[in-house]
Image (cartoon, rainbow, N blue to C red; front, side, top):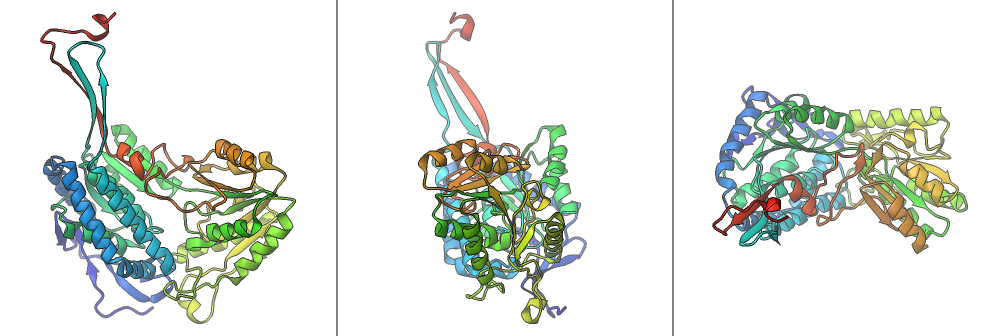
Length: 500
């Protein structure tokens, strides 16, 4: 594997400065489509550096919380403007470090732009309530208050969008942050923070500490001066974070796995449903928590739908995401590719019918990256592991269903509850599905992927712990309510006692 002679070392960003690594150690960030390309070196941080960043954020919080929220919003607005200017540059860097096709990388940056603009506007809202008191000459209201230092742990699949979901609402509410980016995609977080710094975020308000989850993530999660933790990643790690935060009653938001389904009814527009299944199943190489890794297809249209779906999947072009002809990029790393390959074997052993794909792509440029064929299993039993467990790769399980009730049973019969979809032209069925699908997100005649920043994002069951990203739901997580009573009666009033 080739290595650059003088690879750029990206330092931690602590208290407004790029800080040299304490232990002198760094790790490689390589292009998953071409591992000969070294994107850069990033600090393998220690607990000491986490502590340094938390100290800086805690000190900065004293002043940042007192900056008027509209002024905080102006900084975010300027950051959004910088992201707009640099969208193409940042998207290309994202494709190089993550592998997703360039059009998707542009969408990722755009989502960060949207979130930053949206939260900038919240600086002039952050609404509370005013309400009549039950007593005379008394005023009652509620306001939001900031909490403190927020520890943010983000995944590699949306390396700028998801960090923006966490950073921007935290900042607009008056908190400060320490973020640990995913090891596979740290550069996109650096770009996001660079924009905030240039937009005028004061020193210590935003801090980056790169490195492993076992060192940086654990140290951040367990730090007693970090009252808020927001994590996106696996359910297994989310459970560990919950256990770490629970003893001190610290706030924690967990956005975890998904095993999402598209239900295709007999009256569906099959052309549209196939489009949705292709995008939902193989967009971002299936490496989305919202990926449509299951299809529940009505038996009346099963044969026709599957034939079309397989034909489309076979035509997908797999390759480097910077190539304009590429439809599907690589898996993020060798470990994820091996996981996909293992699940393909599990599917075969379970008796599912392999309809297309099933192999690692090799030969020529493929040998330098982590590429896998778009893979479809048919005639799946909904209890098979490939139809129950999150694979996080380009593998889709197709399950025959008898009717809507059967489809809903299959849809809800997994541990996760993030996203679900139904394709039907029957409005009654559509409304029944939106009511009975126990997920955080439901789509009608659209695939299971695609979030808008002004609506809550998150799921039920093992997908999350009740909090949501984006929109006002994020504001709720990053603030505490404070109720204020102002009595100007100039006498003791005893609420329900004097009001009875």
